[in-house]
Every structure is written in structure tokens, then in C-alpha cells.
Amino acid sequence: AQTVTQSQPEMSVQEAETVTLSCTYDTSESDYYLFWYKQPPSRQMILVIRQEAYKQQNATENRFSVNFQKAAKSFSLKISDSQLGDAAMYFCAPGGSQGNLIFGKGTKLSVKP
Amino acid sequence: KAGVTQTPRYLIKTRGQQVTLSCSPISGHRSVSWYQQTPGQGLQFLFEYFSETQRNKGNFPGRFSGRQFSNSRSEMNVSTLELGDSALYLCASSLVAGPYNEQFFGPGTRLTVL
Image (tube, rainbow over all chains, first blue to last red):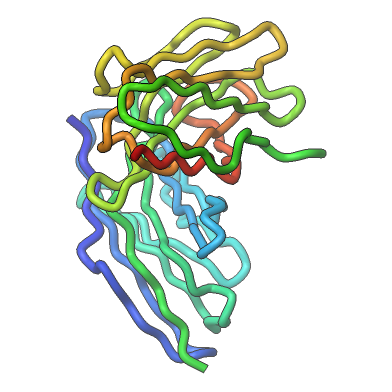
């Protein structure tokens, strides 16, 4: 079965600083996508960034970037220039073999002004 | 373009009752997935529908069922409610089915079972 591990239940970052959220996963698939979703207190899940597993180049979306290590099955999210609005739960989610998302337990990110 | 909508947003039921939740996907999206979110188990996949057919199902008892209509709207039903069914139920839609498609989530339905 596919599993996802987010080893940091909670993280804290100072506004304008950089923070990295870690994620490791286990899959038998050779081709898949990986996603980071953000869930603010409103509970609305918002896609932050996605990575195609067949691409070696790490995805970047404005202040968000990933460090994807396919062999190590590691998919970390880096948030640069952290803003107060980045405070949320962050979920790592590889795409399952049938199309469903497999979610980690999440990392609660706090941003200090 | 309107996002994914879910109704109702909040629901309170008692044990033994049944409940139906509704999800309207983004216009043009044909795949709808359902997830259950609880503090203990986190986010768990319930099932996915594509073109009115259940394409994939998670590890939930038969009390949980769903369907999709020709306009891609989906409903999920939970019969004989248990206290442990209290959760946030999230619906997500995507253009087509498969592991490569971005899923867009609705705001969720908060179900409380008393």
C-alpha cells in the first residue's frame, strides 16, 4: 500500500524567512504526480504546487518550490519569504495508482510576525 | 468559473440515521472524488466517480456509497450513521480521471453525528 510520511507535525517560521516541510512516500508506481496542498483555517484545500515524477527539474511556483528526490522518494516543500497568509496545514499527496490522492498527516505551519 | 460546491455545509444527525451529501464539480469536470477528514485518521479517500461510474473505492464499509449523475454532480450517502462518521467530507473534481490530474476541492460538509 502507498504510504506518505510527514515527520514534522508542527513547524514555525518567522515572517520573511524560509521554511522547508518534509515528506517521504512509498509507491510502486513508476510514473505519478506529487502534490502539496494547503488547508487554511477555512478548511478549503488549495493546491500549492505539483511535480511530475518523470521530470528531473524541480517545480517552482512563485515563493514555493520543491526538492524532489525520486530515488529517495522524498518530496519537500520550500516556502521562501514566508507571509502571514502562509499559515495553514500543509499536506503532501502523491497521486495514487488509480487517481486518488494519498495524503500525509499534515504539517501545521505557523508564521510569526 | 465557479468552483466546486458542496451542500449542505453543516449537518447534524443522530446515530442510526442516514445522510446524503451533494457535490457539484467545476463546469466541464467529469471526475469527482470524495474524501473523509478526521483528526484521528486524517484525509482518507472514499471513492471516485467518472462518467457516472465508480472508478475507484477506498477502504470504507458498505454503509458509504455514492453515485454520479449525467451532469457530473455527485452524491454520497452514509447509512446507519455511527459516532465515528463525524468528519469533514471533502469533494474534489478534475477534468478527467487518473493520477495526473489536478483535483480542485470544495469547501466540505461538516457532519456531526450525535
